[in-house]
Image (cartoon, rainbow, N blue to C red):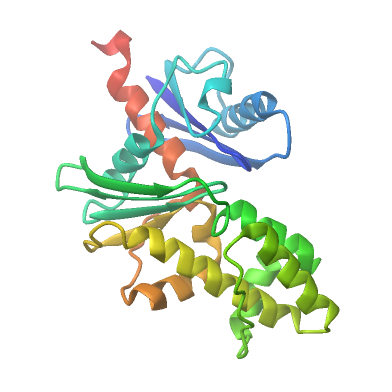
Length: 261
């Protein structure tokens, strides 16, 4: 039987299709509007990649901020459950998961059975999230991925002192207008983001191994600064950080499929 998961976030739609525990397709689709259509588009892309025709999915679960907008899903499921299930498969040694996504930062501990035993979140402020970094890259008039790689060479990160995303953007624009180096500015932004993510993570026990998931986990300079901030290495796993929750949703779809009971 074939199972699927769709994670519909605030910036990207993700879909993962599995069969017999093997991943047939994992797709990520950025979008700026019409989340319902993005959910459809990303699943169609995943099915095409897997060589599947319509109707071949046995059971599908949705997750993420937009989970209710995934019209083809049989049911929806909380994101933390999906993340814990996925990580327990991808790296069973992990005991702390930090999710830095498009709109929020979450952190939780899991036990040896993959059960969540403590959690915390910062969902009231966008600072430190993927959306915040996109806004900052737009202010710097450079692609985010390019900034993430190039700023690794900066030796003079400029501090971003504002705790509010709106004021931080004004601070960045001021630096630009003053002729400051864009890579130094972004290096300062990365430090700020790493500090905010670490601040949320420290609210729970940081039991190694620790993993970072979500779109921010793909930003190399933030990951470097985050490891430095916490003083511990980030453990690895074999999957795109943005697709982890969708993978977990697909795994949970297999477990909760009423047809298999």
